[in-house]
Image 1: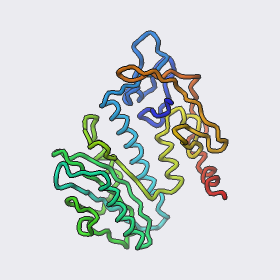
Image 2 (image 1 turned 90 degrees about the vertical axis):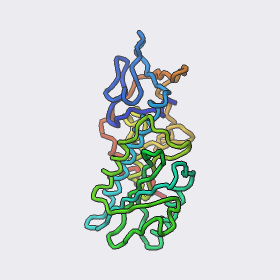
Image 3 (image 1 turned 90 degrees about the horizontal axis):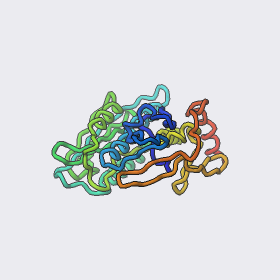
Image 4 (image 1 turned 135 degrees about the vertical axis):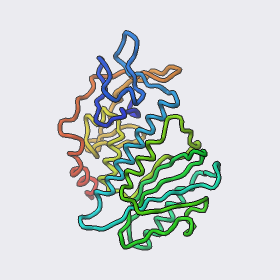
Length: 280
């Protein structure tokens, strides 16, 4: 139940009863000011909730961008195209615009026999309009056309350039997001595609609650109906925390001793996970 919350740092351990680990306060998990320090205080204030959301977003985008780079075969020459998609009007955003655009690009890539590998993030302009930044990995022999001329983005203007550091560009735009940015209701803040199975497992692991990462490596857990399940045994993990709600948020009380960090490291199970998933 407490599994939907994690620290802003993927390497920081959950606090014990005597205090809060480094990085916890920035994620909205603050030590209790009462005489009972054996719980975590989780705020539901908009800026704190947004900060947690943006923290997960930054971790995922950073990981996706680098994993796309690592996936390129040795000696394989490719370009990373950095595209910006803008709207004509401030209030022109509608659900489905970005997904239809990506569907069109995917179809274009398929005709040329290349995988569609991409990461995108949303940003608010100073005028209040939403726009998108999109990084696409393509072989050097293939020229990416302009989105508006292709009819992929009929909602305004587009730009595309070959980027030297596409991940850095994406992270730069993410750094501008503050808890006070008000995106349109229902708008997704990022998306990605074309990752390998291993890479998807790493991205999922990075956003697991810290107590899960302290016990299990990449690919060892799966989420079924909101519960964490051990992939190899089918064991359903009990919630690490009991939740007590109050008007401003909730308190998380540990149901037992908190696990220590997994000694073998988070990525040591990747090969076994790949072999299991590929088995008939």
